[in-house]
Amino acid sequence: MRKIVLEFHDDLGALNPHLVPVIEEAKIHGGRIYLRVVEPRDRQKIVRLARSSKALHHPWIETPTSNFLFNQYIDRTRGNNATGMVVCFKHNDEIVGVINLNEIVLGAFRSARVSYYVSQEHQGRGLMTEGLDLFTTEAFISHGLHRIEAAIQPQNLLSKRLVKRCGFHYEGLAKGYLFIDGKWRDHERWALVHDRETVGV
Ligand SMILES: CC(C)(COP(=O)(O)OP(=O)(O)OC[C@H]1O[C@@H](n2cnc3c(N)ncnc32)[C@H](O)[C@@H]1OP(=O)(O)O)[C@@H](O)C(=O)NCCC(=O)NCCS
Image: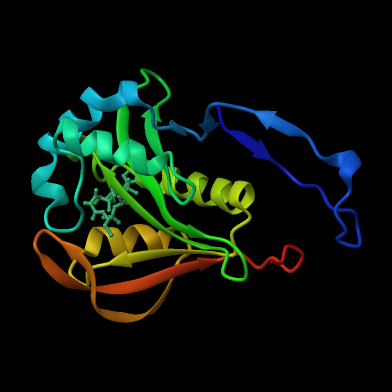
């Protein structure tokens, strides 16, 4: 179970330990969806989602389309520098998408890279906008991040529209940035920066 720690600051901005509730909460609730940490029991559903959505996901992202790839993915999310969450419908708990935080680096950087995909069946319904908004809010708090980046291929218009809606700004083009589907592919770098002054190294 994941702990979400909300910090409360007094009027002058100092952390007030008497106002620090710790919410032990397995789900982060939005309007139509909630987020929860991905678990080994999600394997069949996520592999099915990944396989049936190949036409939407290719060539933008590599997803766990086999049990072997899913197991590798779960292992990565259990390490220190990555996490993964599923986006689920509130009314029936169906998994409609996945959002991951990769390459979490703390110290003076306090940065991570987000990746995500929706099920083809539920694309274009605003569910991922809701999910990514919740996800980034939670990630800034629980990991103490200063910056969350998204690396997007220039032709991936749906993904660029999503991050723009969620407040990311464009930072520039990185040549041959990620190796996806057998090729080093150029990516636009988009970022959401938390204007925190109080949490440092
Ligand atoms: C990128 C991706 C996750 C975006 O998912 P999505 O379903 O398009 O995004 P949303 O759930 O936020 O839906 C947004 C659309 O729903 C529409 N919408 C419909 N009903 C809505 C509602 N009730 N509330 C808000 N928006 C709604 C919005 O207008 C928007 O349309 P637009 O894109 O034409 O402006 C998805 O396209 C995907 O999986 N792509 C392949 C994988 C990928 O590229 N991953 C990222 C690699 S960088």
